[in-house]
Image (cartoon, rainbow, N blue to C red; front, side, top):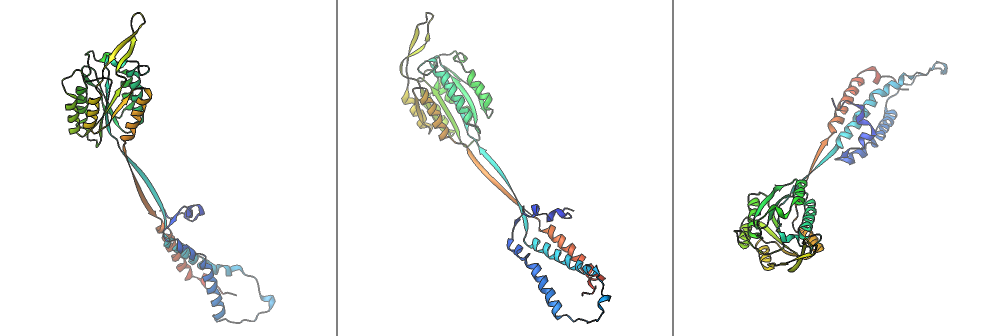
Length: 342
């Protein structure tokens, strides 16, 4: 029996309760006043029998103290009854956090031109570094990777295993695809195919490229419309400069130069169709800012549900009150209530 313990009357236990009717507790100090008033009235109006005894015949007898035992149990009964009426309670609160992440496909150009050194140490290496930092910040999102050059393939499916995604990103090299070119449309198509069956409310493609569309069998505009049809948002990032860009060194140690061509208008159109944004990253700092902006635009949804339960403890003190009341009734019928008062 949970209630059958004196611990329920310890101060440290009573102070832990929250009280539904705390004003009832103000009646506790009134109990001694009520009993004192009752005793005063009884002593004044009760009939008395006067007995004359010689002083030497009067002896001290402490048995009269026993007559206070029944009234003590009545006191305890009333105290427990007031505590029960005050409704001692404990509130237990549980918080459940629900996160609704988004699905993101990183589509990365790994054509040979991505080794251009206008971004340090080169375009591809820095894009990988910034993409890794971006993945680390997207705690609750599923992320996948598509790489492309003259053709495209899915390097990693959508997953929340971000450690695995970062390993894949670091392993990306231009040698993965030997077909030359920049098949932007095909890459968007592969990413769309990965995302189209996703049940996430928000689906995003982030395309990173340094050139115009050269290769592939799917038009970039057609691919963007296909993504939009499946409610996939498309962000496009153009990295590097147009014109002559340093590209490593030859066998004699002389810098190699290649002419980079871009199609900024097409990338802007793709972002517009995909209801995303177009970004131009001409240097290391601007590429970092691009990913920071995308991180701000696409936020995961957090829902916090608080469950509050209340447990009442008045039944414990009501049980004690009933026990004390029964004991009082029992003692009231014994000689303890009939010991003469002096």
